[in-house]
Length: 512
Image 1 (cartoon, rainbow, N blue to C red):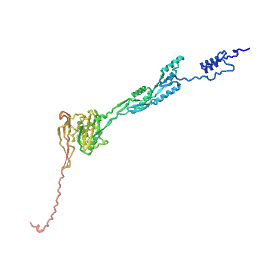
Image 2: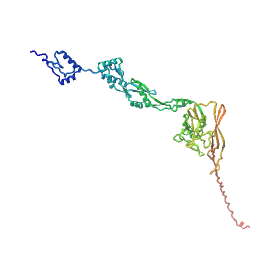
Image 3: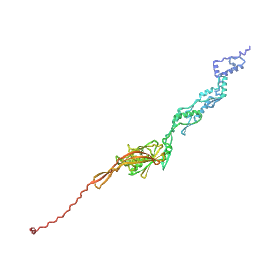
Image 4: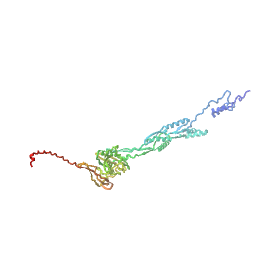
């Protein structure tokens, strides 16, 4: 009896292990496809899989169809880089390459015309790809055939571009500004004036600068944002400029002699040396508008270490030798030059006694601690003081910018109220003969005088001002005469020779 076809077919139900291997090695679609093929090719009824006695299936083998790595759909770009069809690894490598190249791009930071190079890396450029690539990978993979079709159609029509979030490290910007840019800070340097052979030369000023760190840091951050993390760029640091106190323009205005005065220098070589030294210490002094000066300070302390020597000077109404003797002629000559320039005199003192090199009330005494000549530049422009010593003459000149009209002339007139010479003090020295005579000290008159400032316009007096009244003490000479009486004249005694006596005779003796 023939067995039915159905009896010759063995149905092998899959075990749990077989199902697990199947689900592990085959996709659902592959399983369904395999089942369909088996059912259609076999004329016998099969529950799940029909396998003949001669054929067995090894479900532990590798899948017949390998799953492909996901790629980005067409039309997707990130930060300007087209990643269509790229794998995630390929896209990430391309993006990292772009920003690493950007990190090396130069950025020029300009500080008052000086270039300080930097790069994006200097400012701590960073970027993050992961989240953006995750989002881009999902794009175009809509659920279901219809959703996916619609997403792909939209991308084909409009495209889709993602931007990698980038940033900078503000602390690195701060560090760059503090450690690199502030090295270019500099102090302002005054213009310098020199006068040689009658020609003024001005060495130009140097402006000071200070990098404004806070404003510069903000400027760099703003430039980075405006650049949108693309390529190199140039940014100007914010610099605060400091003008020096003495500018080129101000010194260039000094060309005119505002006042000058000359006195004759006499006395010992030490005195002349002191006058030359004191004047040279003042020469070259520059005085800005509103600035004051002291003649005593400019001449420096009168000490041997500073080069001064012993010479006669007034002290307590007497002329005595002292270190620095003669420097009062320096201050007195300068005083008259200042008067000619019409500068403001703040302090001035007369000598205790009159001097021979100036009219009364035109002198200006110097004495450490309580007498000084002080003055202020009351002009709109700087002044320059210059001294010259030649052929035993001392000259001071005050230079500046002449703004007084040519029609204006100034005269300083000394007027003596009285002048009385004291009588000599006479002494006698009994130890000296009457023919002896000597004198000590100097004879100075007792004087009262005053100084006036007279202003003329077109030769006509328009003002007269009494500047000061002075009183000078007189001094007398001491004259000493010898008063010793002459020695008495001694006359030597004369010697008279004796006459021998005559012999007496008896005859004469007896005569009466």
